[in-house]
Image 1 (cartoon, rainbow, N blue to C red):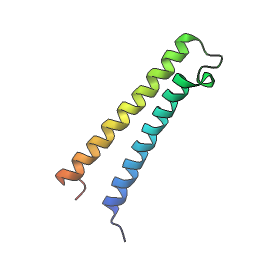
Image 2: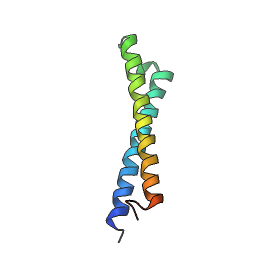
Image 3: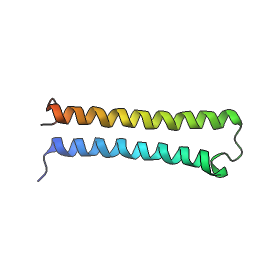
Image 4: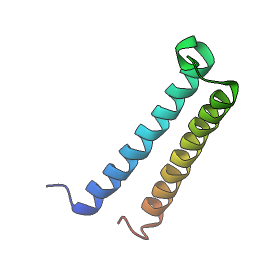
Length: 77
């Protein structure tokens, strides 16, 4: 049986990875397909693009932090 620390690490890593993929998909929709723009104003478009970028940056930071915690053994031993 997998220990709870590993399960928690895996859960948090998968959630961060899923958020990263959502952000990437959002940017692709906004940059490549008109469906990403729709009836939105230019300001909405920029806001949506910035939110997608923030989602990617946050996910990357969370993944990096998790990996540091795993490598150091500080939390996930």
